[in-house]
Amino acid sequence: MSETSQNNTDNQEIDLSQISKKVGNFFEGISTSIFRGILFLKRNILWIGILFLLGAGIGFYLDKKTKSLDHQLIVCPNFGSTDYLYAKIELINSKIEDNDTVFLRDVVGIKDSKKFKKIQIQPILDIYKFIEDKDKNFELLKLMAEDGDIKKIVTENLTSKNYPFHLITFKTTKEVTDAKTIQPLLNYLNNTDYYTLIQKQFMNNIKTKMVENDSIISQINGFLNAFSSTTNGSAKSDKLVYYNENSQLNDVIKTKNDLISEQGTHRIELVNLDKVIKDNSVTLNIKNTDTINGKLKFILPLLFIVLYAVGGYFKSYYRRQLAKMNS
Image 1 (cartoon, one colour):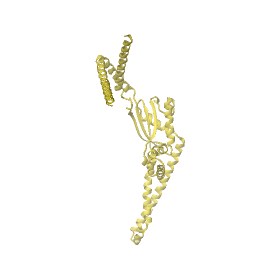
Image 2: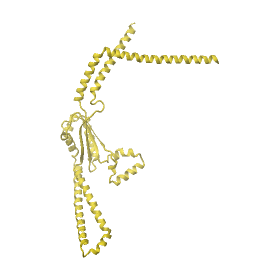
Image 3: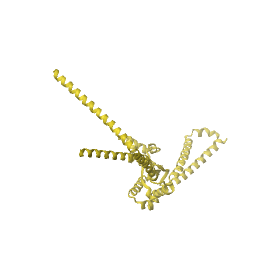
Image 4: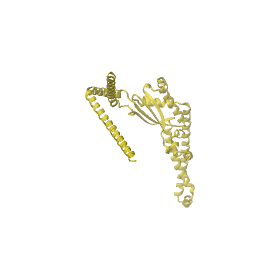
């Protein structure tokens, strides 16, 4: 029993000694590699400096010459034209991917079409605008939320396309202007016979409604003026209590206030409905700094030095292996 215990103890001491030796060799190897790296830098400091300056110079030139700019356009598709808008943007993007500059130039109207790289559209998620003054939308959202995750419902395609505002983004390699890029794009999107006809009828309906509302407001004002004259007259002042107790007068005043508020809403609608695809905000020439854009001045020097170091390592490795074979 004691002899077996002694053997186990000796084996454990041997294992610990081997582990300690391997750990020591590992750190020794790291130390040797670091020292070799220092010697490599010392021997090749001139070439490393040249490569660093060369990479920085090329990087500065490429960063200045090859720009990547982002542009944003917030639009509001009116008269149920959301699907039409998305289809048009997808068509333009497919033409960009096919490098169909003739379509972009002659159909869309963008003269410098070669600078376009990508265009896409996505809804601006605003659930409050979705249900604002829209009881049907609110009830629909509650019904859908009962059977699913509300976050998923808010972002899914069926719901998101019904948001009022949508963001169009596109990328170019050169700076663009509103007159030469945005306006031709908007003219192309608004060039639709069907939705233009819907717009015309919709605007006529609003104007007709506003004329009728003004007529009703004028009649209410006439009634209120007549009532004021009656109550202020001494001959019929005995009916003052009767009119104060008549709830119909309050209803008339409330109707007038509602009509005035409705007229204000219609005036804003006329401003927002002057286009099928209404542009609300335009932001141009945003410098794109994603991935390596604008960073080549830092990346290329490091890349050149790393490649030079890797090449030196393989060269040294090849010589060592060749010396072993020859010996």
